[in-house]
Image (cartoon, rainbow, N blue to C red; front, side, top):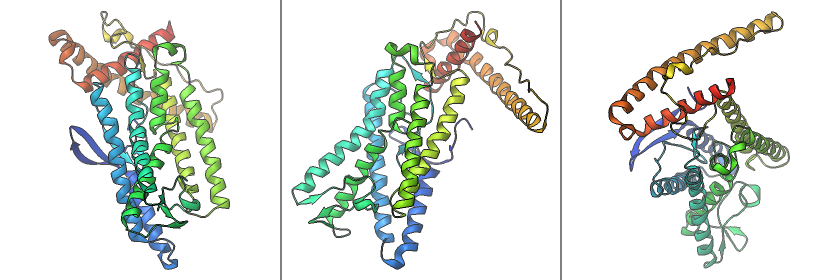
Length: 359
């Protein structure tokens, strides 16, 4: 698979946008429901309340993604496939167009801003009935409960104020979480779009975004361990630690992508294909282990297997590129589908950078 954790369930197309249910959302809901069932004997967590706020989380995620889709449609960008996970759309590293970097950043920020607008509206509405939205992302008193407070006490479960408060709290958490500048969160996508801007061309080939993502992963991991050791099990420590691990996995995937040619695209036709696509091909560097001990042999075989997979991938890309170039020659660039446009962008950028490096 081209990116980690890509397992998801197809939910069809909604308003023309492919929607999939990511397995992390399924696991998250199952763990919360199982925990509520186990703790129900102590009357500390109600399974029905847990199922209810999980349903509200689904509505909050839908509103969040509508914000992205509306911004993309207004700016004339293609709406990408949505893979719902507990914090929005599970988006990994993807090519970023320099020409439309500002629009891409706007689309990435539209979701968190939609969540913030909903939370702010409900926060103001609750004030009229002397209720207060929970602003602590770990819940009231760090308990994980997002039920609104009335006179210092949580609102009665399943009352109108309870539903409104929980919905506002979940939107607030979505907003805060997606400010983290790391994939798969919206803050990470916005940062990468910002770095793709024409005024920052000198930074595009660096590792600023992965370095920043890894720094936040370390911070989340430390905070998570502290909350696990010194707070209650429902204080969000395990969630923070899991998020830190996920960000680290995405950083490794992104770094490998940068090594293979990057994902910033200066011009759709930035490389001259007049001499043919195959003229760009060349053998990769050979792995020469220093000592042929057991570890060195294992690493060499692993590198050879990876190189074989890469060769097979490049051969498939070459065949696909030949087909696309033939289509452009016969019918023009406008005849390409959005998926073909993205493929051409990604592959042309990768080989142009590889040629520049060799030069």
